[in-house]
Length: 318
Image 1: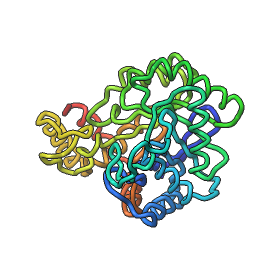
Image 2 (image 1 turned 30 degrees about the vertical axis):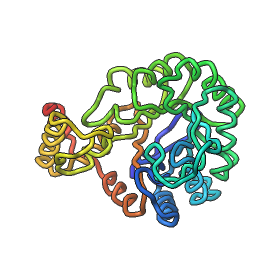
Image 3 (image 1 turned 180 degrees about the horizontal axis):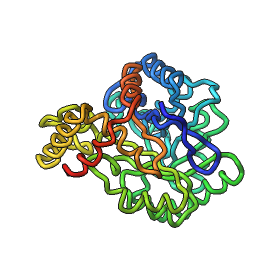
Image 4 (image 1 turned 90 degrees about the horizontal axis):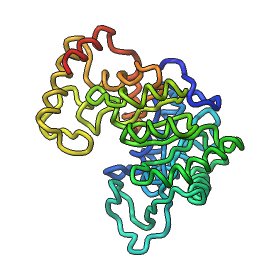
């Protein structure tokens, strides 16, 4: 893997491939404890040094598993998120699927972007992670809560960064427009953008990424496969794009790009992983990993970049 890159303004460095820990929070399907732990350990031992989680992921399960697997390792960067507090559920606790996670709903999520909510959320995350420090904290999905985030969450995180409690703070979202406002109107130093800077959707290049370069804000890119369609060498009908069945137009585009990749002796997943890293604002790509085999497959994708000539031909095929 390439050398690490600076991330944020607090002295952190991260490798270009990072571990997205939603999957070990039982995203869509249950993962065995031992399988999740092995995935984390194999990743860390292989040089993956940035792990991203959130209370939302499996109602705290992702944070607990990540903390247990990493133990007291000091050679990693951990980010988590605020905005959803967990509290005992008012009903039930039955097994099932809770907002996409296969977990028992014995606790529930409550939106809270207040200063008090941020501090309570971080305190609970520290306990679940078994750590006394979190490196990066993102305001998580504040799409319907812009004012609350601006008035409560961001000032609280700024205070914590000035006190040295956290190294960096930012926001993590699936849209670039509001993230760009946060970059321009707060002093955050890192953002996580999911699905909006990919081989299929480059919209973040129009607003967010130039703003991040201008303001010295580091970018982590998630959702590089747009929920699955470009994770396949040859996407087929039924493939998902942004968590819904891909339209015929999107499917045709993905298959065209896959054909261009084959002409250059590579694959669409290979291009999808490397594409965001070509932008100077992007420091790392987060891939969801739920097993040691998935970790090794992702490391193989990252081992060497596609040929330079690929990128112009992919651009021409759009």
